[in-house]
Length: 51
Image (cartoon, rainbow, N blue to C red; front, side, top):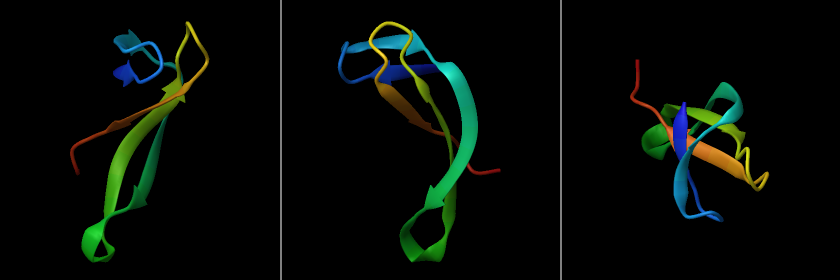
């Protein structure tokens, strides 16, 4: 899964990507992928479409 790294300011392939959910407006939930940047180690986060 590719995501944007804020620290490197570039799109990179996430390492150890896992699917997660978080709260959204109106009491709903959103799906997302959470991982680590392979170059700098910063946490990366990408919001996915609802299923």
